[in-house]
Length: 408
Image (cartoon, rainbow, N blue to C red):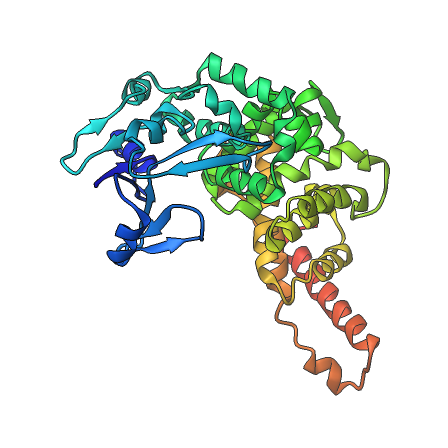
């Protein structure tokens, strides 16, 4: 029985990147041998085991054969006779199909080390097309490694386009799609992920709400007097991803552009319900975590309001705080303030320096957040009148502060 380090750990080591997880493949082993060594099996029928001390994953070498549609339609064969090369050939990209033995020697039957030097994302074999999730994974790797100069091989991109054309991606579960997308947001260049999906024509079928941002060459925003295009959108997503790795903020930035689709600028309301519904439906379709969903919906709904926050009345600002449940969830204020400040600088096309942010939204909240309800209770107010009087005090204090600081 021989054990090899495989996958991302080998790749990242060769690129001098931090190693996050170590995965191992066991050649010539059996389930019984590993269980006897106190390994813990993951699942009933899948040959993956957890090491008794490190809890790292050890998988028996296996072969796979396509037996149906989507990423689950596979027949898996694992036995002591499966070779290391047979196991590696089932992997997606050559840079992920390099193994390392206990002596530090590399086993690289598909020239993954060469592709690392060439900065090339290339499929291992034509079996790449058997798993539609690989379209998203390749796009995600492109986003993760573009800063090192990596690009997708032309033949691999052709295969990705063929998979999309055959509607293979329709068999992906919503959780799988979101998992890859969330990982893409955690990279330094998540905009590349969406650019690749658009290039292989997958964006329309997966994220039709976002698709129009790439298809329309320009669309006019009367609020900032700018011409928006996919380049502007991508640059903004790239900038904000440098400043924060908070997926809820990054995703909210992406979704806010959907307010352009509804033509909200023709209304006089502070909250754009139509745009918010689009985002809400998008989030529900992919089971996006509630904290990410809520921030994206609120930021999109108040997008126009935030873009002119300095010109809004104190009453409107206090009403907005109530709408976002700021008193119980102040973290929302800080994140929305971050987005508000970022948009202000980004839209004005200033030399980008986030230290110049005004923090106006956050400052407004600090001014009024500690007003106590006890004062109102002592005056004998009851029921809804308590909330009304409390908001009147908040508006009065905020207005006084704005006049004093000349924020009006």
